[in-house]
Image (cartoon, rainbow over all chains, first blue to last red; front, side, top):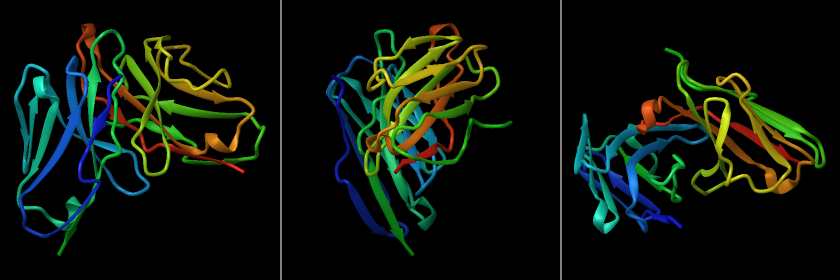
Amino acid sequence: KQEVTQIPAALSVPEGENLVLNCSFTDSAIYNLQWFRQDPGKGLTSLLLIQSSQREQTSGRLNASLDKSSGRSTLYIAASQPGDSATYLCAPQLRGGSEKLVFGKGMKLTVNP
Amino acid sequence: GAGVSQTPSNKVTEKGKYVELRCDPISGHTALYWYRQSLGQGPEFLIYFQGTGAADDSGLPNDRFFAVRPEGSVSTLKIQRTERGDSAVYLCASSLSVGGLTDTQYFGPGTRLTVL
C-alpha cells in the first residue's frame, strides 16, 4: 500500500528564503507525481506534475525533482513570499490500472513578511 | 475556460438523511475522481470514472456510498443514511486522460458536508 510522508508537518520562515519541501513515498511504481497547494477552506491547486521518466520540472519560482527509485520528491520554492503561505501536498499517481492519487497530510507553510 | 465546479459548496444534514453532491468536470475531460478530506488530513480516494463507468470504486467506505456519471460528464456522489463520521470535505477532480496517458488532475473547490 502506497504511503506518503511529508516532513516537517509545518514550517514558518521569513520572506525571501529559498525553501525545500520534502516528500517520500513507499511504492516506486508510479506514473507521475503531482504537487498541489491548498489554501484554507479551498480546493487543491495543481502546481507541477512530474512524469516518472523525468527528473525535474520547473514553473516560475517552483522546481520539483523526482527520484523514483528512492521514493523521494522535493519541491523548491525560490525567494519565498507571504502569498506562498498555504498547505503543500504531494501525491504520486499509482500504476496498475487505477489512476488515483495518494496523498500525505501535507506541509503547512507560513511565510512571514 | 471554466474549471471543475461542485455544488452545493456547503451541506448541513441530520444523521440518517440522504444527500447528493454534484460535480461538473472540465469540458472534454474523460476521467473523473472523487476524494474525501477530513480535517487535518490529505484527501483520500473514493472512486474513479473513465467515461460513464466506474473504473475503480475501491475507496468507497461502505455500501451507503454510491456514485454515478450517466452521460460521461456530470457526476453525483450519493450518501444514504448519513452518519456523523461522514462529515468531511468532498473533492472532485477531472483529467484529460487521453489514450491511457495520465495527466494533471484538476480539483474543484469541494463540498463541505456536516452531519449533525
